[in-house]
Image 1 (tube, helix red, strand yellow):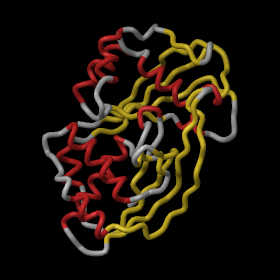
Image 2 (cartoon, rainbow, N blue to C red; image 1 turned 60 degrees about the vertical axis):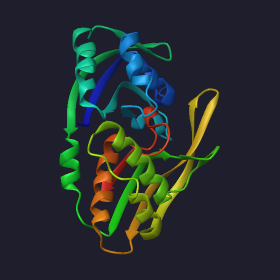
Image 3 (cartoon, rainbow, N blue to C red; image 1 turned 135 degrees about the vertical axis):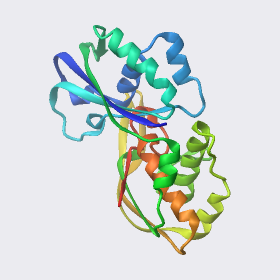
Image 4 (cartoon, helix red, strand yellow; image 1 turned 120 degrees about the vertical axis):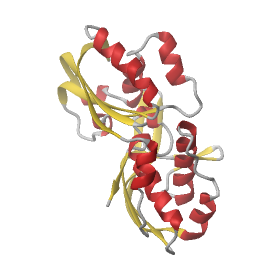
Length: 248
C-alpha cells in the first residue's frame, strides 16, 4: 500500500534554498535510519520510495527557516521503521550544508491500497499529466528528455509489479505503442545541479496523452498514472525528480 508523508524540519539558522540540492534531501532521508534499515531502502534495484521537496527546484533563491520533505513509501511495511526512527529519536539533529536542522512533525497526507488504485482507474481516452519536477529517462546509454508514452508506462509497470502481487502484463506496452499518442505538450527542459559535481537535465510541464480507441487498457493506464503520484516517473525519483500529478 503506497502512503505519502510530509516530514517537516526546522533549521537553527536561516539557509538558502540553494542549499537544498537533490542529493542533500536524499542524504537527509537516509540519515533518518540506522545503517541496517538504510540498506534496505537503498539496496533494491527498484527503490521502494520517492521523495519530493519543491524548494530543490526553485529558480528564485530565498532564505528559509524550515522545509518540508515529502516521502512516498511504495511498500507500507516500511512505514513502522520510518515512524519509529522519527518519533522515538525525535531529538536528533541533521545537517544541511553545515546548518543544524531538527525534526518537527510528520503527517500522513494520502494512502491507497494497490487494489483501490486499480479499481479507481476509469475509462478515458484523454490522459493529462503535470510533470512538476524535471523528468528524464534512460534510453540505452543516454538520458532522454521527452515524454514518450512507451517510456512513461514501461517505467510505471516495472515499479508497480515490484511492490504488489497484482501484476500488470507487460503486453500493455504493445497497446501503448500502437494507440497512445502525445496530443499536446507545454514543456521546458531544465538542468538541475544534483551536487557540486553533477547535473541532470529533464523536462517539466503539462503533457496531454490521447488513446486512439476505446479499450479496457485505458482504465489500466489511468490507474498507473494515479500510482505515479506516489512513485514518480523516470530517473532519480529518490532525489525529487519525476514528481507528477494526474489532472482529471
